[in-house]
Amino acid sequence: MIPRYSRPQMVDIWQPEARFQIWFEIEAHATDAMARAGLVPEDAARTIWEKGKFDVDRIDEIEREVKHDVIAFLTNVAEHVGPEARFLHQGMTSSDVLDTCFSVQLARASDILLEDLDKLLEVLKRRALEHKHTVCIGRSHAIHAEPTTFGLKLAQAYAEFARNRSRLEAAQKEIATCAISGAVGTFANVDPGVEAYVAEKLGLEIEPISTQVIPRDRHAMFFSVLGIIASSIERLATEVRHLQRTEVLEAEEFFSEGQKGSSAMPHKRNPVLTENLTGLARLVRSMALPAMENVALWHERDISHSSVERNIGPDATVTLDFALARMTGVMDKLLVYPENMQANLDRLGGLVHSQRVLLALTQAGMSREDAYSTVQRNAMPVWRGEGKFLDLLKADKDVMAALSEADLEALFDLHYHLKHVDTIFERVFGT
Image (tube, rainbow, N blue to C red; front, side):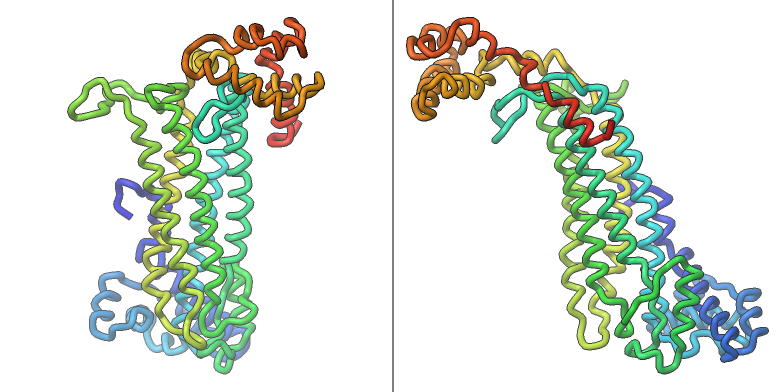
């Protein structure tokens, strides 16, 4: 990813230096395991740790000649280690190094993403509690429906990202496997104990059966989860964008001193951060499909997945890390306008209480069909600006034959819709 949408800690995981360091540790730990089993000299294993070094530029230089990155790496390490380097990579194949390294990188990236989610969840919980009873209109099909609270909107987002956190934990476990099984995965030239030793040292689980490569259904699941998290970011970003529309203006991205909204129109305050998040979510989500297409490799292995993963590994994790951090900042500083929420609630002249009137009429003995028709014929003039809903209902002889004036007025109590807010909050956040 370009620096504009990157954060250093995540980027560092994917730098060549970090990748080659993991490669070296895999090779060195494997040599240790072989030494313990008496397959290579113990002093050779010690020498590899003591003298083992690599130089990225030199590796690149060698690769330009040999056209093989793992061989170039091993050749460069051997230049530092000396004769004992012949015991490196005994019985191993390139995928043992590449796949295990990729597992380590994705697991480490997951640690950062889990921290990102924790920070976002903390902010969402705080803002949800802050606006637990901030009444606003709920919308279906983008049209006024019935009252809710802004806190409930945020509690919904909290619950969704809490599920995402659980998904990512499962995806991290799914992806964190080690394969040191040799050509076509039979362990013919490398003992399974080597794999177990390397896995333990790197904090991975052993891959139960690899076909020279770790099965790519694991990766498909991992990147799909990243895509789901990105979709949740887009869902919340889209909500903010809609609420910031001039005609709505119930919430707004923080606009800092000196910030400019438009090169042409000095008055503009645009939702640029959430628009940006919508675009970044599309990028992350787009990387799930090639990960799924990587599952169907030929026979025991091919490398059609390799070029894909060299791109989507860093790009998906770096982009999602940035997006989660940006989303956290947006929600932390989000400007909320309760007075505009109340004004919008009042715009339809009481129509938001139509369901309560419908139900009251049915409970009073009117058929549902007649009750619906009665409520609707009084609601439609309100849409046209021809009066208040309550006034029109009071003037309707069918309504007043079924309900008293006091009963009808009671149906317009806004707080009726909020009586279970505490219950919902307890379900989401606990007592």
